[in-house]
Image (spheres, rainbow, N blue to C red):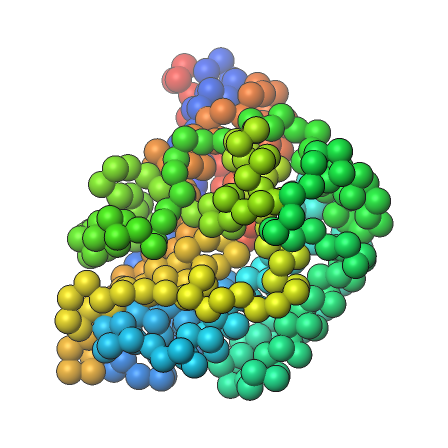
Length: 378
């Protein structure tokens, strides 16, 4: 169709079956470097964030911010004022994405009716797209509006759980059971699932690590890295849980039961609750470095995990551009999603599909995916 955006690809889950029963799964992304190639050769000026925002319907603020951060580190370093403004926009967008996941996407995947008004989130998303032009006062007002929306759709209480305070299991369950929003049936169902559902042995991506940064600097330009990224030591995963599991509210559950499906979604709920209180320190959401002159690598924390942009700039033009989204880390062959999908613990196809969609959504609530089957009996 003329004027339509290009197909950016999807996640493919290939289920290996034997005698008609699901045995294991393999994952891969078909999302190629289309946008990166489109950027190469263009002037590295302020027309690029607008172009990026037009191309990406998912997390346009994070995408444009990661590009800005990469450019800033290629040319020196961003100012404290720039980082503060960028991080505020990133947090606001991530709050809305958490809210959309918990109030709409997750209930839909469980066939739980959500009476929440999607237009509320739509209006907030529209406001956030112009966040780079807002003053501090306007940013704070917008944060409060997003927080009010989250309270209306999910919490409806002054007793909002945050990352800073642990609640024993019985208190957590009692709090969930006392909610009158879609949060109650959704999280009650998640609590009824085996705690090992969704687990993998894949470590979290730590972009603050000097070793990881050295690894990324060496591998980001390699063919196919943006579609199936991995580090020298193997696969890595990234999510809200991956950056928050050491917090007081999550560590006891993480140590007791591991990183399962419930905890992935609970981490989103707690992070959203914390962000409802105030803006986070900018460097926790936007960072980066320059591995060599003219090259910048920017990191942005989205609702789904860490987004990476790498740029090589010469004479004001982008000679090289690489974008690696959280989705590609999590769904890379041999990665966290593939491991978790191979350990669903059920053989009934209906149950398998329900659990599979939950596991896919724990890593990415928005990207389209499809399930294919291959039989060992063929």
